[in-house]
Length: 215
Image 1 (cartoon, rainbow, N blue to C red):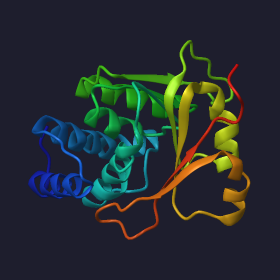
Image 2 (image 1 turned 135 degrees about the vertical axis):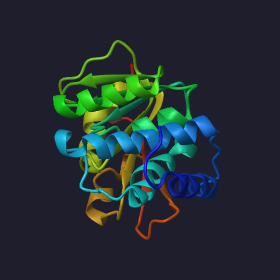
Image 3 (image 1 turned 30 degrees about the horizontal axis):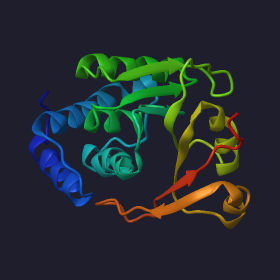
């Protein structure tokens, strides 16, 4: 899949992936850029993102999502409130050995994410349309991710039932508020500041335990 500025974008993405301490082969780089191209192509139709500049989207969408990679463990990952497929799709491209379930309440956005998985041939991705409160799965997950979805307290409350006994919630946040952190103080396993190449903004991953004890 080729498009204007492809060489510049490929160079920026390759350098950014390296800057995160990650590796990606040529096919993965092409798939990541293909995802951006599809997001730009269908952005207005599906109300996906306000970011129209592809070079900025490399940092704000792709690298920002991939920065979570070091905190993924286990085989199954649930991305709640995935929207346009962030961070789930970029992570699924980079980690084909893991299974990703992408959940969102917007049927329109889910249609887009399903189209991306088909066009890019992502066999490790399942896309589900449902409200988080109503979603039902036959399995539990090793990690549940939430990016710009809700407060830490709400994320922990809503996502806990999806976790395996040793599972963790990964809440992707910008600046951390004291009150928000205090509300989940007993459930915080770790707080990790992220350095995303190209972004001059605070980024954190807050690791949370489940809000209940598994029986």
